[in-house]
Amino acid sequence: MKNDVAVEALSALAHDGRLAIFRLLVKAGPQGLAAGDIARKLATAPNTMSAQLLILSNAGLLQARREGRSIIYTADFAQMTALLKFLTEDCCSGHPEICQPLSAAVAQHCTPKRSTCR
Image (tube, rainbow, N blue to C red; front, side, top):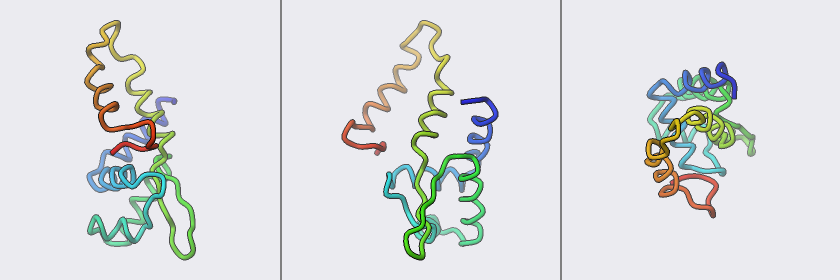
């Protein structure tokens, strides 16, 4: 991942509403949620939700697919993984104990049978 891509993703997440959307979609997993359901769950006006989803999509953090009359949004787990790798690739400087809490958190919340974290 290049610096500019990471900056765009982090900038998109640096907003309470967009961070809440992204976290909700990570929890929803690969099946995702319809835009209207996201708006209802987060008590957000539909026009505001559309703008927030567009910013997250343009940052590469979401994927969208049409199912009938609904647009289903999912977190882009490959992009999320790339961002986390980018943020931690130079971690530790030979001191793995620095990154151990992060590794433990991932191991605790993610299982091989699931493609997402809980």
